[in-house]
Amino acid sequence: MTKQLNTIIFDLDNTLTHRSQTVEKYSEYLLKSFKLEDNLENVLKIQSIIHRIDNGGYPQKERLTHSSIAASVANALIESLDWQVTPTIEYLTDFWFDHFPKLAVEMPQARVVLESLKAKGYVLAVISNGMHLSRLKTIQSLDFEQYFDEIISSEKVGFKKPEAEIFQKTCELLNVSAQQCLFIGDHPINDYLGATHAGMSALLLKGFHDVFDENIQTIDNLEEILSYLGITHFGTTQ
Image (cartoon, rainbow, N blue to C red; front, side, top):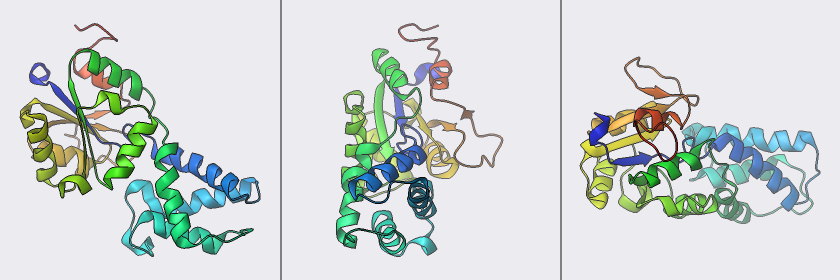
């Protein structure tokens, strides 16, 4: 099965990036940028607010006070923190869109896996739900853009995972068939079932969502992609 695969497609959050660690980094950056009292209590309060609303990039509607995660987080932070000068919700929302992608934390082994796959001639792409500019900023901040032939967002193509159309549109843009594609993501429905129902092979990166079906093929880390494809280490194949 793996021999016919020539295209590897990745989810972004909690696949190529570690969203929880990004939240932690952003929380510390926000505290320093707005000269809030620099103590553990404030850092943990900011992190708790963001984690509650963001929910790993899968927000629950009842926790959203505004149309976006960014604005909902901004509103909660304004209400909960002691500001020297209280920012407007618009300013703090823009601050998220400007800085959260740039502070993205790379998932362990992501770079070496991308380098190995690119060196072996695989076509590489990203499919991610969300705003296209924020997807690009995240990938560019990690210097990952060089590896990808296509970066697809739900905003760009008008479909979102797990809808089959977003996977099909990506295949069209890459000029490959679904049967030639291996998709890697962290969400069993949006990523794994979305990809497999569209005709792709898939691997689920464990650790972020419950695996509800024993038939789902899982990996514990990104480096296992190389073993799955028969790449024993950088620059060689079995």
